[in-house]
Image (cartoon, rainbow, N blue to C red):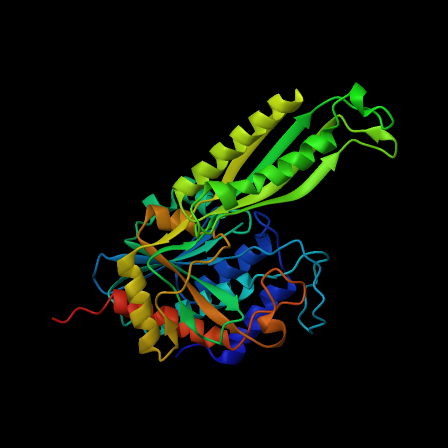
Length: 381
């Protein structure tokens, strides 16, 4: 028998009360591992938690991934099961993602009507784009070979249980950049005696906006945002140093490379014009998430078999997803599951008053189970 909705809700609320940041998910990992063992699954503990469920004699294997980490946000929901960890909360629904996958594991373990192996992947530190690669570097895909890999993320603002996905690119990359300006500080009354780093920085901020508007194709879906402007200036002191930090999103590796190339050229040109030094760093933590057509079609079929409203060709999302590293290594599909449009369930991800919708728990668990049965059908002898 599948787990009851109340059991899933209690499990999700337990995760929600005790959120942990990336690579600090010790209680969460122990809770996941204990639950998987209680279901009779083979469990392997490492950077993340891996549960193995085998049935029949088939040698095919698929992977299902959930993320475990929370965010450094102070919850303001006022819920009875609100975070009990100051300054940390599950503001992205990873508590729900874990619970849906554990619910699927319980459903499939109770009635293993499939032929092959399911590898349940519980990964840490999705929010910083480091957890999936850490598991891959640890050898998870060599130790537990899988032919396909899947992940669900809830989507506030979409109707409850609506499935949306698409073949090809579904999530943008994220690159963090930093530009450090070294000029010459001085007295605010005598700007001609130095090189004011604020003026140079302001010009740089404006010039960076031309990358998307004038150097990439219209409709590329790229974003370049300067998010911090830090200087060593004071009330009557012109700064000699300034640092610009920001975030770039791209929908293709080529656009990502072009953004970095143009950024470096703009910085070099402005540095020459003002006789200053500008150092540029550009680090990509999340690559683009690319869905493979076959697995994506399988998700659409499974969702429709569950009677769920399904959008098979949604527009790509501008946010980034650490699942991209798994999908780059193994054919896979990342899908979105509507979290609702009202109240806390409709608030944006990463909001202090967001909450995962408990109504999704059985929907997601059943969708996972349907997908496993579709992809690993029992042999007809």
